[in-house]
Length: 277
Image (cartoon, rainbow, N blue to C red):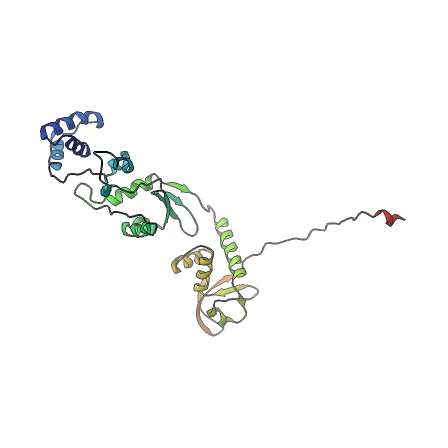
């Protein structure tokens, strides 16, 4: 109703006229009429010459389309408009989920921390040339960003990842197999400081930085914490010493290789015509 009153004043700034028009509209937009004192408080709120729509309230965001409103004669100004946002997508990936936020025609990948903190969201959007104007608290809405985020999360779409321990194990084994294939291995433990993997017939040992570099090559720009979480989830163990050499590293059983069983298949070669003669 505050936004209705703002529109009414934009149409006709005469207090008698815009208050009357607002009362008439109340029967059309409200399921229940406001108490006269509530309505009077709204009128006091729009008396200020710098009155503007409250576009960032949860109710307004449910019904308004800023990209359309900004084009209207009595709509919001360009500086007031929120970027056009689509349905938030949660991707339940391994080892932790991430989010896809469709905004201004672009799909932006966000970590949970980037989505939760408004400043980090703004920094990530700026990488894609999208300027985020922070949602600032007011008396009417003390935490508008939280309200905006709760609405997004409430209507999010889930993209399921791996549902079982077996599948997670397969992913870990597959990735460690690729890691072993991609990085040069050695039988000299002190060579792991040079980015190699030490291995024998049972296990492999390597530096966290080596694994982090491999993941980046694979397209995953994981930090040390994300790499550590992945290794721990897969059963890898951190070690600080091996063969009398002090060196912080990780130990993992050799990944299981696909078994190829030989089948007893007999091939019968047909005789050539001249072989019967």
